Length: 158
View (cartoon, rainbow, N blue to C red):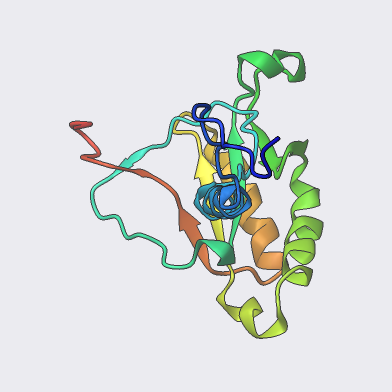
């Protein structure tokens, strides 16, 4: 009997999986960084009006959004009159003050003077509703207002 056994030729060597956890964590980190989180579910029809002189906001994290318009087809049970949407729920005009207070409370104190209220209003919305929203914003001293629009000609709708 021989003391040494001969190695068998043949067989495929096993796949090296030592780098697999590194690759998985690298992909996980990439998708965490690259994914954009949804802000709000839009419950109203929001066909924005056109404007020809448009500026882009620099810091979107300092913007509070108020939506106004008729309820979309999925929310017809709320009627056909223009409604206000704050975050993910319909609201009344008198709830705007508490919404602004909650948004201010969620920000650092030194950022509060830079907060901007953006009105995303449907082009067919009633101006009376917009006037009521602006009155409530004046009451809580939220005077930096931005109207969100589409870029294009007001008359030609290019």
